[in-house]
Length: 454
Image (cartoon, rainbow, N blue to C red; front, side):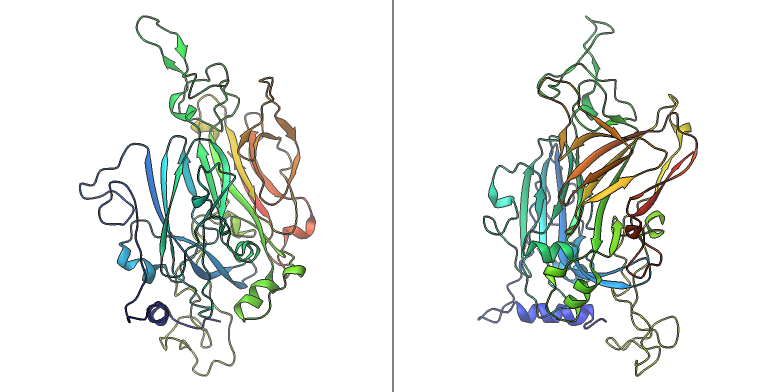
């Protein structure tokens, strides 16, 4: 049930931000080196400094459709990179994505992440601040850690710029750390990973005086012998021996929503923290078969309302809506918010060597359980966990091969699946417990996706 239109909220936010002087105090102040107009991009003659990346996220609310058709109310992050500061709040309303926008970085980057709190249109009684917590990242300053007790939280209508000096590769995640259980359960979660410098350097010719010899930079690649030359492949870590090389990469975030919790938030009821139980298991914010739908899912719609007093007309905006006579408006004003699929396809013909290694960057953001993941017919080799290369203090690799892997909330796994000798076909990656492969209504849904090998 939608309570306000985007236009109504824009006015509500302006009123809420009025100070004693009668002037709105909302500040969208984007910081990005070399960017002069505040849109967090470099256009029109602006110069991007070397190894610098910028992004502008909003924190707000929206809806997400479960695979059985049930729309759930969510909090979340949305991407407004490229939007002029004056337009960010208006465009950011009801645009929170589930999961949030993926952040992909390279070792050596200087990353400026701007976060604007646009408020909650569906719950105008809330004035929650928000943060970004780069989970597992070794911040030099607590000010950018996002933990509200030791850092800055962002109030509604304001912007904070986080700075990160990206020094360690691996698979991470990010989330809001304000009232963490509530905000994470409501959907303030997203994928984040860092590629190693070895992707760029690999082996290189040492010069005409040493034809055919290769060398590596002992400072940037400190762990051993030079890896194979970088072509289309990538590496998970600066391994020095090429053992974390891959050809295909996919980030999958494991989560589950508690329908009762989300409905309680929507209808302004006490939140059942002690009874929290995720009954909508998901990969990247979707249950099967939506997991293998390419691209963005259509915007969710409210369920048919037999009490709608004016059939075919939105109860809030008064605008005509499509569909059946009793249809009610799109919950997100028609804006899709589930943008990331979990479809995986490997075409071995694209790799002349015949090698086609799949890297799965798995992150568990479930709040109430461990997940055990399997892919029958495929062997999964863990080469990293918690954004750390699995290598012992003696320099030996301690990779783990198994048919299934179990991990808990806040953990990440880097898994390589070698498909070179695997028969072509469709393989299923899924949770091992049967009830986690369906939705709350035991219809379509659950933690399942497909790996198609051609």
